[in-house]
Image 1 (cartoon, one colour):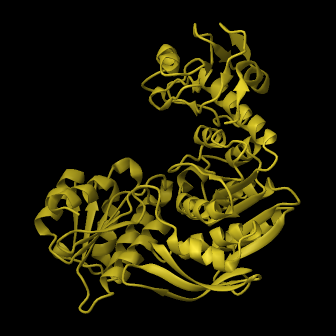
Image 2 (cartoon, rainbow, N blue to C red; image 1 turned 45 degrees about the horizontal axis):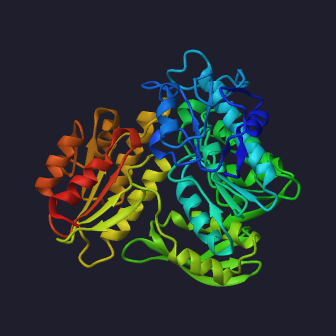
Amino acid sequence: MIQLSLAEIAEAVGGTLHDTDGLPVVTGTVEYDTRKLTAGGLFVALPGERVDGHDFVAQAVAAGAVGVLAGRPTGVPTVVAPPVVAANGNAYVLSGDTDGAGAAVLAALGRLARYVVDKLDGLTVVGITGSSGKTSTKDLVAQVLAPLGPTVAPPGSFNNELGHPWTVLRADADTRFLVLELSARGVGHIADLCRVAPPRLGAVLNVGSAHVGEFGSREGIAKAKGELVEALPKTGVAILNADDPLVAVMAERTRARVVLVGEHSSAHVRAVDLDLDDQARAGFRLVTPQGEADVRLAVHGGHHVGNALAAAAVALELGATPEQVATALGTAKRVSAHRMAVTDRADGVTLINDAYNANPESVRAALKSLAAISRATTPPRRSWAVLGPMAELGADSVRAHDEIGRLAVRLDINKLVVVGEDARPMHQGAHLEGSWGEEALVVPDVSAAVELLCAEVRPGDVVLVKASNSYGLWRVAEALLEAVGK
């Protein structure tokens, strides 16, 4: 963050000073975890379900914080945030926040982030949203922009009303590009995040079924995702997926210039002549208004082509050449954990740990990658799909899980292991599609899956592990790695 005194921070957030004259200057980072504080930092005291940050202010000062942003006086140098009522009902609600302090602190954190963004004249903000692929695309964009100038992007999926301003406050006077991932739990949330850090470039990747239980329909999801392009200025650029009709039509919702990306002939930034190597890494010819270049991605999965095209469009708009984009994409690595992490065991077993999250679109993509890797040799390698529940699908849950089971059979996946009762309809779908006996089975939990796989996986097999993050299926992949060693 740029250096600011506590008095300046209080003015920026509309707060009041307590136990300080406001002269101390924040020279370090802004943190809500005392373990990450460094000398000169600002501690953000947030109440939570298990702990209340206000109880740790003394520890924060001992760790080097010069002050605290809090919902009430704390006995140490403090900027107290003014009370706030969330306009959309739940944008600033924290579990365990019984007195509204969390709402006040989060709102103040957002105002502080906006204050810093407005101070950074040379900063370009890039926003990315979509039902799936946000984090992977954010990682690609950050790596493709890095050669063009100092770039800040969030670690993992820091994409909500806490992680968003926290990431913004990583930017300083040297930062040229700020790459942000935007998520939503409801209509209005992405618009709120855009007010915190107004984007000049915005990319919408897709509209899928993730969180359809919250939004009611894909059209409801599209309404929320499109808030990103609505927030762009007339001088901005909206990067839209030409292959997704619900995204392409968002061109009508923005005043910004539109750049279409995809495999469709209408795309301005297009991929042609696609192929996958034996590790499901995509190669293609990148076709752009600025010229063409050959690309071979280092990340695994054909679905990353769309992500790479979005990253390419961002970089091209910010001054990169097609050759620079191709080089950067060819070396860009997977950054965030448990996302298409492909590892070969010493005995030749290939593990695909994609267990960070799951929705129907991402599971279909992962299954296709599993099939591609297993068929890259002659004879094909034996394939395992270890799949857990896909969360937040609402009334579509049974149908969506059933369809995934059917797809596993149609892709000729050799073994389907369904983990947990919530995912049982996958087994039902596989059975009805023609998979009987030991080809598809249900196990109750992660421990049972680990026991089964450790006993039955043999050298040369390919194993995909995928589920919504809350089910912790990444532990299956880690157990399999530990069983033999990398």
